[in-house]
Length: 254
Image (tube, rainbow, N blue to C red):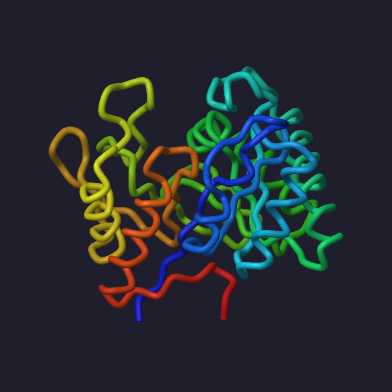
């Protein structure tokens, strides 16, 4: 039986401001990337999201970001590898505290937004993030864009990896994501995004914006929890995958 992880960016509320329907999404996904306070989230939100994920049997991951609350972590910043190492380690440690207090442990680490894309192409930043993950706990699985420098860095250190693909994003011919600032970069149509995801899982390929196709490995599919159709899409995608005989499970699940 084919198997795929469904991961979702969660815990992105902050103070009195709320984003997404985390409770509904946690019933549909197998891994949760929980914001650690740098791009979203706060201590109370982190604690509550860990508790909800644990109740649903969803694997916990630290969603580490550049320090950019106002830009939601989607603006690139000029950070050194040493700074990337420190901010990664800091955020993993913060979420780990809540996981440990709840009687569980983190399963993975996934960079967010601009840091994710910077590490996908910059091997020095990728190495810094991978070294921080290994220094904290070499059992942590590193999530990164399929075919990226981040996965190469993790592989070089012997970290467990998960190659990630995006059901609701357009791809370029080189396997990178079309930037959000460009029109059409995000697939808003639920049926189209579901069809793209099924193609990734069944065929190991995805259409590109130039009309071609690019091969990619997908161990985990990312769903964005902040979209207006997030819950509808997650439910539709899960049902479509299961109907196609695909098992939904976190990478570390038995």
